[in-house]
Length: 192
Ligand code: B4P
Image (cartoon, rainbow, N blue to C red; front, side):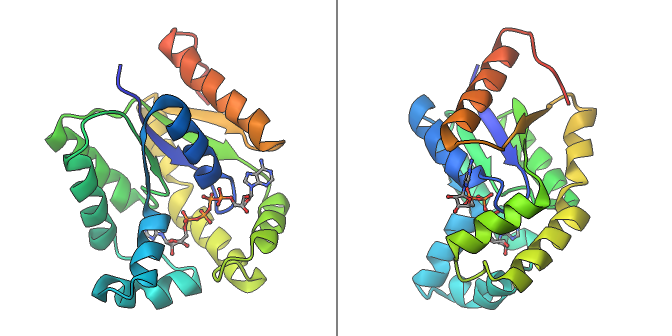
């Protein structure tokens, strides 16, 4: 079965870190909306100019704009993929359902990486990206709690949600994620 996975979790949970490893290990497309938006900003494209201040503040970029980015890439990629950082709110989750139905690419699993808040803040302050100051990180966490966390219920209702402990070494977390995906393959999954 094609691996089509949405990776969920708060800022700093390690979504990007783990998706890179998983994509390389399993030959999947890794689509990070955060990376794609930052690439537009770096290229100073007209899209980049529109989103630069939004990303720097820690706010969410408009749903239509992010959906267009995702649609263009999934439409030409029919193999397995990992969506990292999308969907980010219930509107985007509904848009993704429609898009995948249109493309005939059903989602296999929504993987939620769980990490306590103080660890998230510590990781992001060490990373030090331009949107990783303490004020902006706290704002991103508030937006996560308000806008993103509720979509877990959307996937739980469809029996697609799996939770993985994101604490510990990068390698340990990667092993847990791999086991969690393979359990599902063999019908032994534990839905969270
Ligand atoms: P993202 O790029 O998605 O960034 P993130 O959630 O902050 O990080 P992630 O969870 O991927 O953590 P990472 O692996 O890097 O979003 C940035 C911004 O883009 C948003 O604020 C928003 O403005 C915009 N955006 C993106 N998608 C959007 C959407 N769909 N709609 C609207 N706006 C959108 O790990 C973080 C740090 O922890 C790294 O330094 C890493 O080395 C470290 N780390 C990872 N795993 C670790 C471990 N096990 N132990 C210790 N450290 C670890």
